[in-house]
Length: 359
Image (cartoon, rainbow, N blue to C red):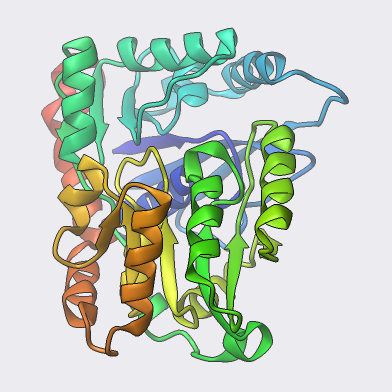
């Protein structure tokens, strides 16, 4: 099959990580795979090297000064639509709302559902659910949300994780630089529960423990939220280390050197970053969401409020080295990208009748 996987960015956000890993696993099965995306701000490559068996088509997308989020969304759709050549592929598979709006008929993976206030983004989100002819979700919880909200039945294909990459990472490099720390990834934004994590961390009252936040590449403007977060951190007497995006090769060591991985997200579709932490042998404290219960029940600690998060972090920090560790490692090794790719290949074949030319 000639397969096009479409994304919106070259940056290390969860959906982009998923797209590249799936593309490489499909190519390893012998499929002809091309990844299409937008090269924002002059990017000519992805955040990491990509298996040469995967073709890359990165469409230039220069920055526009003072462009609003809504205008950027509409321009993203227009630029990708103008460049993409759907007739060259048997399968067109969009991984986000921007790429799903840029093509007329596609398979769509709904990684998670959001509620947007920007009108252009809300419309993009809605169209990207109702227009595709077939749907994948990375968890049963998200599939249930899609069916309840739109009457659409999606096929569930979980994420994979490169467990060995995290399990074998050097331990201590980051610990020697940062001391003992609680790690969160995904940057500082509302959906990541960043303010709740601050409140929880302040309750720990452990002077020798640091809070480290990594990541943060996003399309959206969270400057006001970031300012609120920084003001609250100062008021609480917390001095987080904000690393920003971390190099692909350094992330496993950063993860493995953490004392605890905190995952207070308010919306997730699977929790790939938390699964990577389990693969690294690090205890995980996550928000008590149905989707995260589905994926991590029995291997992580759950909390809903800052007070509960503080209690769960305290337990994780004081637990013995084997507490939940073996169960977490076993879970992480069960989710593989080769299995995800094989499931996608079978899915593509199963929906062949819905799109002429798919075989």
